[in-house]
Length: 412
Ligand SMILES: [Zn+2]
Image (cartoon, rainbow, N blue to C red):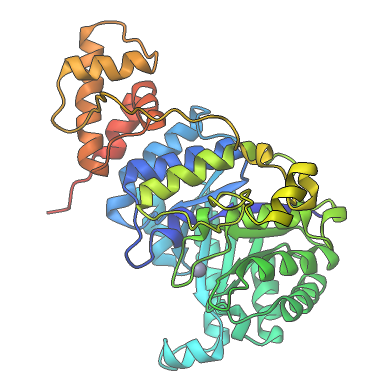
């Protein structure tokens, strides 16, 4: 039976979005949370982009150390040989790539100004995959940008060429969020059935259907006999109206009436981690979680009207589809209301010792404490927000990799 896998693209699509960004340390924490959650793969950045290099290489090292494992870290490139070669030059240890190129006649005409045809697009993609294989990439996905406005026949040709040259998957990008669940189900079933290669759903939310299209498309791929991959982002962050929200996709796979008995929920996902992750992402992005956000909004388990409150108190199943405990909610959370010591770029050793003492982190000697304090100062320069408990512990545990992550030097 084919399976569904999650490929989260927060660290690529999420952060490339207008007015939405993360520091390199925060991107690292997103990878860490995704791994804790049991997500299959993180599209962790742009390996051909100079300011990403130290972050990407340090994260690849953390993967080798088993810290960011078993999650796969995969980089996004344009499907052109030049990008792939530069990616492996800057990040020699990278093993997973997704290579992207537009396939729709509209974009060929309006973006490439008619200089590319579907045949030359396929040729560029094939050459890029060949280049990635030469550098011993372990898995290569190829992305059909604007797939929803591309003829199925062209997508089949694109996918068959990708399969022949050794790509593992094809990404169906609903780049403008123009698909609907009924259409995308049929298209994906046909594409999977005719190409015999796994497909990835990459859906945007311009019509408010990003999640619905993602799960409907995945179901189409499964019914077409192939593994399905779904692209998500935490809290639905992404270009314009956003991408498919990670938690909404997972809950839909688990609880939607037509999906829940199909065994599509990825087995290694531990949903109890999502509450902390969603809150961290909101803090790091500086974007509040909407009150009615699926599962993690303030109102997701709140009841006030007489009939609803009465029903929920009698039995939660009257008005709650799933349990808040399942999402890691319900534990009391301590908020300091008196004196608070935080650490930041101008902190000294006494305050630093106090904060780490409360986290029960010990240092073997003063030298080690001084080194971590220096890193904490730089980390705060990087994030410009009080560091979270998880960030502070991460810095103390992996100081060498954090030093590399924090090092960003523009070329001369
Ligand atoms: Zn996108």
